[in-house]
Image (cartoon, rainbow, N blue to C red; front, side, top):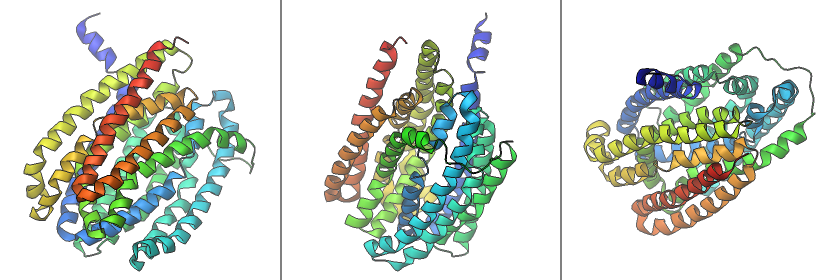
Length: 416
């Protein structure tokens, strides 16, 4: 076999193809989002950014409860049991999403009282409308991922998010304030449903509660991990908004999205492609090992250069692209951007434990990491936004490589 044939074979694998489609999707999204961010930076105030950050954080916490292991179980389950579990999962999804709609609307009043700003009530309730739409195609989207047809997922994400960002830019230009960020999320949600529903033939059968217990038992550890992951991803927003101020939160939110947004997009793409890729090799541990280590190499080749390039160029492009008023956010942006390097490797480690039916180990690691991060963030607030950013970087740089190392040693030493 020639070198060219080896190269072609290596990069024609399903994982690489899926990762290619997802990465292309993320590149399109980032280009559109960059233009949107430039417009938002010029037309929205720090206060608008702060309010939007609170609304989206609340929505993210509520949305976290939808990641209760239903999709993970359907991707992992044996083919002969897929249909009966899919039907049960469909009706369970409606129960969960409807409940979350009510919970988020009720919580809006408590959140507004916590931040002492009644402007938060209506937008928090408005974003909950999405939960009454998603269940229509939730199972179809999961089965598409199970079948490794991630091209559909990539195109759907690119269309949905790009259209949403175009609407955001338009609404910001028209003076919608924080609604420029909130409203498009609701308007584009039906597009996701339509595409996924159309591209998979599965349809629900009769109402049933069979196997709900099985789904809950598998999902409890997954939900715990997702809860802690969501808490970690938003803990800095909550602490900054409450302990430092809403305006400062706006500055931090800008730095986080401008600095970490690109990297997180690629991390999401890698994780989306990796989990079904690992699940498909569960019966062959040698193949499982090869897929895991190959994913780490691909991740390093993608993430490390992007993060180092972006962080080093931040002092040049921020004042030019986003305007001079965001210069104070540059040190924060650089620190948060560097914290992206260990994240995808820890995500790959989490996928390993989930794929081999050991989500409890992932949950234990998440508990420890979340506690450490929370303590570090509270201490960091004594040095304002810079202290918070240093806390984020330090905890990710220390804990996540350790978790990845322990997982990698397990994968290397296990033989069956």
